[in-house]
Image (tube, rainbow, N blue to C red):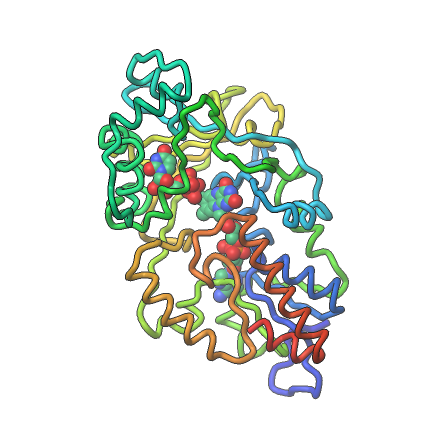
Length: 392
Ligand code: FAD
Ligand code: UDP
């Protein structure tokens, strides 16, 4: 079916839904609406592929790598696992990260091993480690910022070694200028658990993310229009309802000014050696090093290959929007855009960029499934138009 009906509008729109963005938010909703409601969906992305930031592909050497930086799947939501498992099998994988600090590679999140290695200690039990950390922690009565969280848990020295430099590089802001939710993502442990995540389900899609997205969006009622920017074609597409997963400020032509998003530059390299580093990700918190982390994909994918591919991440103010920046003034600006969004009929805003939330993949899947549930409930009550209205 032709996506366009320039000029002449027929009585019935060509599509029930135009979905802008083929990342997790857009692809999950496309799949649900097509498979559960029999809706005709046009799924559009300005990139030439599905998958959004989770997109992976083989590089010139044939090694599967993540074009937009390392994506590790982890969740506590059975519902999300059950949903995605319709489109992929899983490769069990528990993520481990080392940080290069004072010339040593030590586990991050900070755990008992980190303390023993870094300070030449012999802490034997959880209690020993808890006591040690308590002796260094500087309690903060009212924890507001990303600095407060860490200082309160581990004290200034560990904060400076592991968090201050990394955060300043990653966000271009001091941790004291960022909401506590940012560094709260990283726990402090008194045991020797060196996994990065504590979630009940940790695994990688067996054939990669792109293969999962291909299966998810391969439906006779879903047309895909890749390499197309919504801004260039919005007046030509004939759809009853829009689901928008791009940056919310861009949708409204930056009417209230730019909403800050942090970007990254990825430097992908293939090396003529079988392995580069001991774990999938090594963090470099020092401000003397320009990048934040190096990732080696074969650890994630289990691929065997005589060469290996790695990615350096260089944070940047310019470039594709990757991270909403959690701080009060940005939230205030987002709220103004959100009010506009709420008042915009026929458009639903979903996903990390459109709802300006620092969400992981599983949380975005959960958000998209919840959006669909609301549409579904409304539809049960009053038909498809109602369903679209419910989503808005
Ligand atoms: P996106 O994936 O950003 O998709 C939005 C899509 O909309 C994009 O493809 C974009 O091209 C398209 N778009 C925007 N505007 C337009 C327009 N005008 N016209 C057409 N198309 C448009 N999460 C984890 O759970 N684990 C991890 O290990 C992890 N690592 C990450 C590492 C990095 C470097 C980054 C940046 C993120 C990471 N995430 C991770 C988060 C994860 O990427 C997101 O939660 C998830 O991809 C968000 O999905 P989304 O659909 O909301 O957005
Ligand atoms: N962080 C840090 N040092 C580290 C790891 C993380 O300071 O070694 C801080 C930093 O501010 C980072 C945040 O914790 O942005 C969240 O880390 P995470 O690994 O979850 O970041 P993401 O994978 O989302 O980029």
